[in-house]
Amino acid sequence: MEWKFLPYVSGMFENSTAATVAAECALEQGDARFRTMNSLIWEHQAAWKRAAQPAPVLRGLAGEAGVDVMRYDSCVAEGRRKQRVDAATLLAQQNGVRATPTFFVVGYPPLQGALPTEVFVQVLNMVYDEVTKSGGPR
Image (cartoon, rainbow, N blue to C red):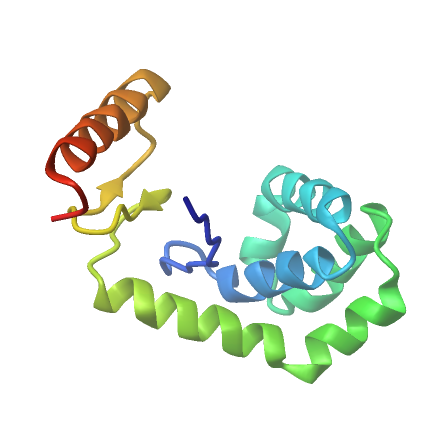
């Protein structure tokens, strides 16, 4: 089994690309920094969403999250993470992603939306049973 996390911007919020890049730049400094930054981004959503310039708001959150702000600034300025976010968003759109989270199981339609854990487990067990009985993905 292989898991891949790709950032996806649905366009629902103003400045959501900037917030996603900010989270990605925090991720470069470790999972713990990412989790803290991600929580702060959601907690302070109203501030960065309506900001004419979201960068200072997001930079402040990065500092609050314990992110090395100099490395963060370099990451944001470099643009590599924005390219990743843009490319992943395009890929998601091309593959019909309309909700987060979305999970792809090779050979099956995507599982979209915040499914209850029980439903998700049920679907994965069904796929597993089908694959093991047939000898591989369809």
